[in-house]
Length: 91
Image (cartoon, rainbow, N blue to C red; front, side):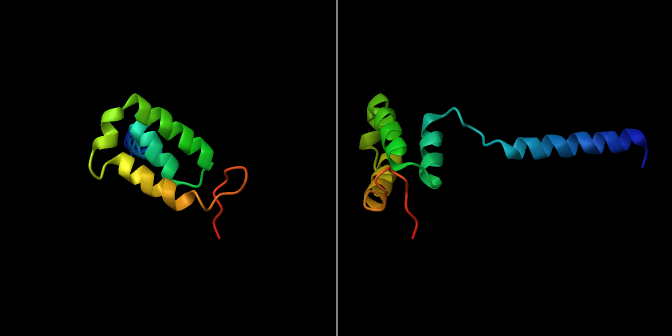
């Protein structure tokens, strides 16, 4: 394999690796809320972020089975499973 082909291969590999390493739509507040709910996080941080997000997007509250419904389920499930500091406790 020639040097030029190796270089092209490396560039393509790096491009694919880097593009898969960064989630798309990170600037989308709904996506950010989803990411917060998907990983262990501070309950109060997620709650405050969600409150601000839904105040700014009140139409999402009335959507049937939308992100607000998903958040409410998440909130109900985790609200009794947090430490005094809001850390989600996994038993």
